Length: 450
Ligand SMILES: [Zn+2]
Image (cartoon, rainbow, N blue to C red; front, side, top):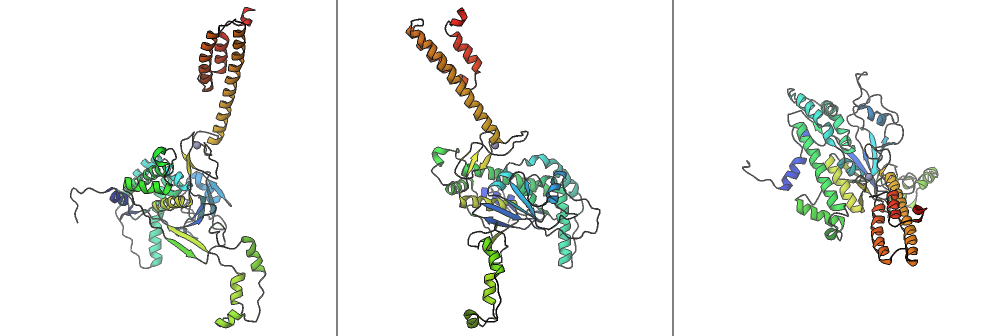
């Protein structure tokens, strides 16, 4: 079909921006995602499909920007960007890696992934990848010929390596772009612009969406009576975006013995050791084993070697990850609040809503919370001082009206002005010293006569 002066609907554009293309697809990695819904923590197991244990060329340099090197070399938990815990799945640090994030478990509170992605300034590295893309696109397209699965994986890996090495600085800017990179089959002049457009659109849409759905100050008169999910339904209707989202959930009884994955319904960690150590095999079949014709100990073994329920999601694109996280925020009732200092949203933990986030803004050494606490303290001091000064002079001048040194009308007029000056001092417009000078100079004072 050929479209002539065809006007695309918002929904068609929405899908087109997110769709894979022959030259570039947005699902480079296929990662598993686990949810701890009690602790509200998401864990992304970043694939290591494209990493091999042995590389032919020992002298190759790792494709890792300098400040990301710590990620690979870190032992145990590594806290990244204040909100993400990175844990390596391999016992020892590999001598060479294609990419910093492969083979890591990335854990974070629900909402942090979206916020990190939304607040990343992707324009910073845009020009350099556009230039690289333009350079690569002049290469002649080579069709790899493969004869078996191993060769197919090898060809795929080499494309993946080229994709990651050409985009790495751009990708490493946010956690989601790092762990859900695209896959470039071959570079055309449009591959990189498509990818930049994809990132930009996802970011723009998600920022607009979280403001509409989670911001308590967004048209509160009309929207405060709505639940976040109802606000989302209205949002989709207004902007013509999809109201449903498909996510693939896999349930297994062969879950990992990791309490982060699924707590509910699984046995207690303290009980696991007790069950494992108390196993004593017998030669006698139990009644159930007899009835079902099973060998002895079969039933017992299932009790003493526990099996764990686990639920996992398969996620391959930034878009799918954002949607998974967003829908979980709706399901679990996550709340966001806007920081009064940096103006960015942060996740509300517990019942107490703070005015400030605990991030450190660029160019600052203290968190917004620390800056905010100092500000409040300073304000308090200013307020107290202004009130104390006002009271002191009020008492002094009022006493003089009693002995008729000051006329009551003059005093009333003064009082009116003094209240105004006190407010100006409290708001920081004038300093306490200036306020006192004004108070002192309002009437003739004894000390001046002396
Ligand atoms: Zn802040």
